Image (cartoon, rainbow, N blue to C red; front, side, top):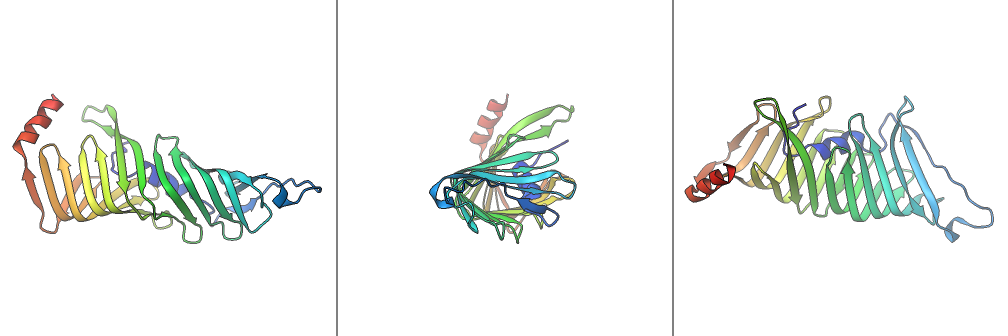
Length: 264
């Protein structure tokens, strides 16, 4: 499967696997409390899971808490998992807050999201908005993914891609898009993209990015050429970039020669 794209693996996995969906069975909380101790006198294990109607586990949140019986559960040593058909995701954080009524959650301090496909995202804090089906953060985000690119002879090559933004960032898995904001930078061996905002749209069935729209002070660096525009649209199926808004291309001969030598 050709997975050539700029933002893909983590977005798709998180967006499709999210937390409590409309078809989830009622979440179950296994609790074992000792009569001699109240909930606020001991640190207890917290485990909450959501299931599809078929009985397949869709997600779970685990951690330690001293107030496990309250409506809002404060957690430490958080481990949250989302199980997908192709990719499983794991979120870890030092601290978290889980609302048992709304299924909203906040994770903070050393937040790391990693996938079985090699993706990895780090942030200072992340919020899950269950009713809106969104993952959001106002903090800076770094996303690392190893995407596969198929060459003309049919062989596949891993291309590490890193995306950095100052935030906010939003993944809306209900509407199939993800938005990176403020000082966005996409970096891989093919080049770099700089812009104010980047929005990735993807197909919910194929789980592939259909297009990416970069807006605001867009700069694309590839080899010895620098491209400037107000907006750039990347069409994944055609592997084509369309520029709009007074596009300009600048060629730097010395840098181009240097890039060609390095590629030999």
